[in-house]
Length: 325
Image: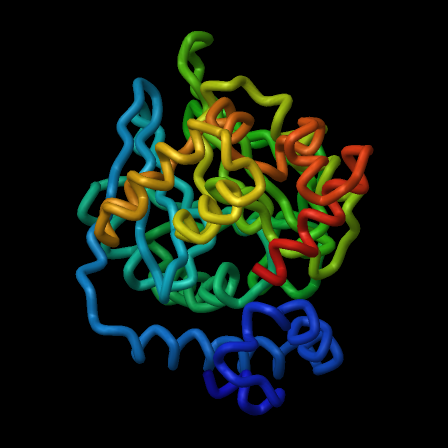
């Protein structure tokens, strides 16, 4: 909590004043704000009772995704092409833990996918790059991310619909500015036409929620959630950046108390232990359309809750309500 004390916040006020906190941090030089943020996450992680950070894995025909818990509630992801054993990691804030998992799986890790510059996602980039410089036999590490000098170790700046491969897996970049100006989601597909893809959404789309509008507008989040992510196939698995299930589902149940899908998943999340809540990720695009109020801003029930009549005004009012929740 040290960073919040420095900025004049007390613990109960942190979630209500996140936007102001971000604005204050943005006034500081980037490296200083990153160091303060790193200090906060380090202290908050060690202040928790130590819990086993077991990985969870989803095996598909062409790819295997391993979810690696980090810090307090972050997720890192190791994405492996089953045919070639080529691999990429998404947001490796704890790089040595990532390398440990990659070695255990016997894959060749040479790509890093950054969703956005915040320390709890990109804070491990430079350390991981240094590990590769120290071990030239590992090959080069290619670091993808949005066009943003705040992303450490960046080698390949990507824009909307830029594409690359991880072995035989196809990756398409989705530009989703709002949480940060350069936020990128990564949609990964295998060569098989019948296999559902996976999308790594960082802090844009969560299970039953979305990220704060720190550096963007309601229109940008609407474009990201409704225009781009909702357009993906319903079976697409959604791998988000944090475990926020209970809080998000409680808010959704308040907005739409008659939504049976939300109530059922909330009950499941509340009854689960930490590992059980983590296991709720991945969600799917289809599920998010049913339970995520930020992807349901066209619904009369959601509009009525905030007293608005257009999807865009609903998006703005809904985020303001969630910030105070």
